[in-house]
Image 1: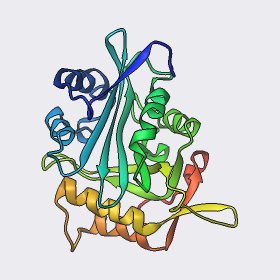
Image 2: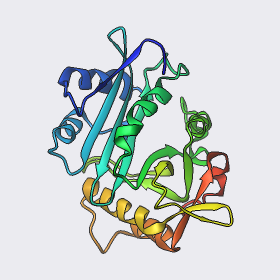
Image 3: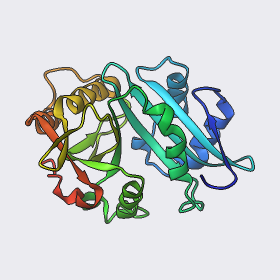
Image 4: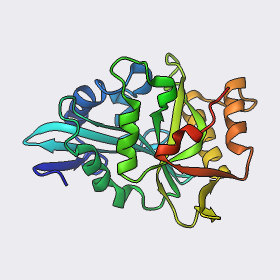
Length: 243
């Protein structure tokens, strides 16, 4: 663990001021408006009033907020979405992100079959100012994550937002009873991912069948085979893009 850093679990001991500071000082500088839930949405989730149960932990150093992580539990699907993980600008590269993941893993991953996150695909985001998707993937590789062999599109977070294309789904945790290994290749049943994506879009956009063309295509790619391969992060370019 990073020396001098402590953690405050907001889902255990809610602190509105601390959540607002984490959102303002860490998350807002790290995510675009269309990628980031507002404080009110996170507050409802942390109080158990949202469609998905929210978990959050703040990293503190001498009273200063230096990082934060937010997760959403889709209980019926037994999937955790690690929605946001960031260190305070100017304080990255000090191990805060990995310390946060180490702190939350024992509690957050208990009882879920899969813990996933969304990350920018370098093939789509390499020319975006202030964006270094390759370095971010290397960080996730160091903490043991793997990439799912399907493309992803982030749903619109509210009626005023927009979907964001060009994402990869990465797996932070896969329950051993779910992971399939054949001929040395790891994979996960596609229905586990498909059910989560359907619920995610239903929760955020109110999506119902018949789905629009883009979502139908995305689900088709996810569910076209019985299993989805899990690749090493370095092999992200094996993930086929969504046409």
